[in-house]
Length: 162
Image (cartoon, rainbow, N blue to C red; front, side, top):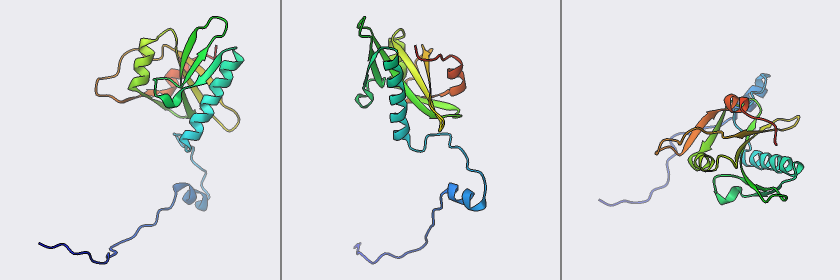
């Protein structure tokens, strides 16, 4: 058989309309997203909030997010030289879950005394930073790449930075 190129034939079309626009046109209230709309912007905002909290405590934080180490911030106590490893999760206030990678969980389990899960609730009126020590109890299944945790349960075990 021979294959020959022919001009394309259009068989259909589609118009994509954002749900938010439809709600606005109908006069309906906007729905709060359960996930950050601008994920990278919110992640950077959350890391900055945690780094500012660490500086306020007298620590010297360094952003390591893009090195894929199992944590986002390495924070050193200049007086003792002790280092804390902080995984930052920025979520829109009111979100119901947090997704954690297998690598992050394993790092936390291997460094229970120095690992902190920082949860930053992002809100228009100001962000809230909370720390969870020893956030994970067991390794994820071998085939799992991520695990979803209930944000309310983690926040119930959290405390202000310290």
